[in-house]
Image (cartoon, rainbow, N blue to C red):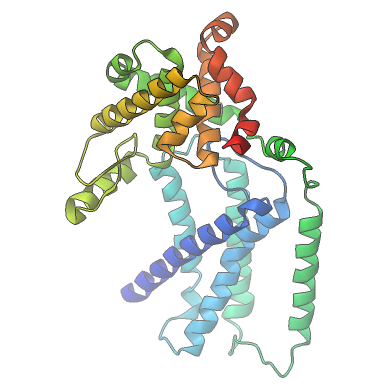
Length: 342
């Protein structure tokens, strides 16, 4: 029995990665990909289908393959795959420190739907049918299923927002929404990082508060995607393999183990050098170019700029924002035009 539980757990891990892969390929069609800023509400049927129905489809296919291959597993227990999958999902939320910013009502609805669908399929289909694979001599039901899936896909694509007519409109259509729980997360992390690394960052910024805010914004975003647990794994892997990887809270490239403090020192000094050069040239989009120097991904630049705005809006008065943050605010307001300039 122990080895069968281990196989179910491995199959749950495979399901976890398949669901993530499907989600990444469906993001442009309205799939909600977890992010610090973006929380789209369009294409809810697509999200529900992928997140709630996907694991049930996987359970059916896996059970059919187990049966077809004559693997000595008890199909009455195959629902353990779903249990392990949900456990992995919840564990990842807590390991990444996202328990206070995820949309728990939506998650619980999806998880409950998964359990209901999987339980019904387990009892009414997998455990009660001798041969799970279809009989291709009688394909009437399968043909109608294909028709329903086709109509669903057509309807889902037609119900989306109209295609923007310009680059700027396209950018504004996907403006990230900074919802309250994520704003609070940014504010909390800014204070925490200030207390912990302020003595290291202040001398590097040399009193330039706008540059300093950008550095903290990068740290918040990198820490969000690479929390301490993941950074520990990266250090262990680098120590074993000796390969170059991104490391530390600032996620700088290195082939040897460095601390979070060392990563900040290396990364912030490198960014300050680039920032000083751009300032000499009085180059348009200076702050976006500094972020781009750290990571050229356009979505990354947008997220860091909006984290900067969240910090500034909360931490400084209206008068201070006008006086101290004129340059970066100008860039934030023109952010989408800036993308296509790149």
